[in-house]
Length: 278
Length: 152
Image (tube, rainbow over all chains, first blue to last red; front, top):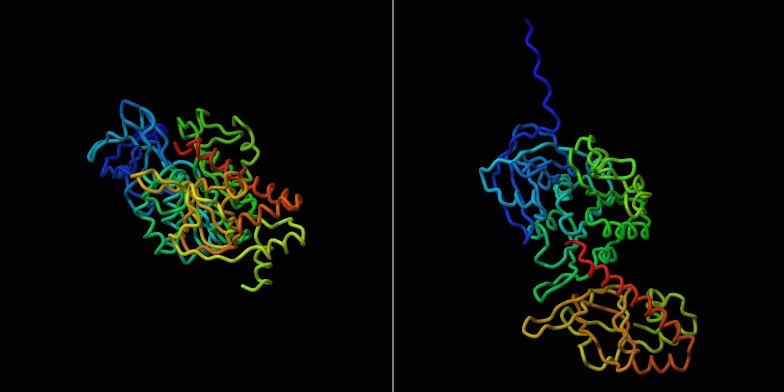
């Protein structure tokens, strides 16, 4: 009698990862560092995992750490039952993990070009792995800039890393919507930071993540400066359930954000950006 | 700066785009270059708005103060932008503080002189009001979007 080969694991069954560390970033945002359930995970900047808070549910969370590091890092905003449950995790606790899923930032295509990273709020989390990559391979790129907008000084994410990024060749410009007496940086929309850049339109890639209204206005800034639509990439957030294209919850026009995204080239989604409910 | 340099600087500022040549020459003759070091005040809330500034380089924080909590920046403006429309509207007093964030250079107009020229030459006045309306519209849009609290 022949032994049957082990069937492939069902795509929606999570593996178990262990929490190595929990760090509070802002009043409602925290970063989980997880020991991976298995080595040799091939993660690319921009991708996401499904994190399962046992007994509560799953949420799609972008990878926010260095993808060359064996640990898995996720920055999470506590806004619903699942993410609040994740917030209660402590070192040693178990968490379900599926992934990585989705498309990645075009870091190879951008080689030799200037790269402008534009982020708003927690939108810096999916872009941080790209920042790490750009800085690790600094000599492969032209000028690098990060334009970052946050609600207030206390909500600036990863602010303790900015000086290091600047030293390594990233021009970091951060602005807040509402200043306070401690804030010495600019106050205003993230789009206002474009005036501080000298962009070479035909040699620039834009990587953008934030609220969609912010991304619409950021796109206009790239357009005004002549950066072609096929050089600007957005990452979209939708209600992702299965993450493998079964359920259709994350449909965006003809695309599934979980499989075709979350990183999209702007010219491929431009039409749907003008539709109020896509 | 020579008169020619001032005229060139004015012509290169976005606020002067679309100005007729005679108006540009008039304004160039009526403005002076200025420079403020970081931390210096261009305007103080409540004081007479005696000047209108075109920013050529550097950044200016517009703000107010919250008593014991100190000064609070509300918006930052930079090269190619302007500081102040209080000079045009009674009672001609600054509504906000304006502080140089870094070294700021530009062109400054005497407010009373500029108001007088706008009254005397309504074409010039209309042009300046349209330009200031565009500035105000952009700042209202910025304030509205920030009011949406989009990062919430």
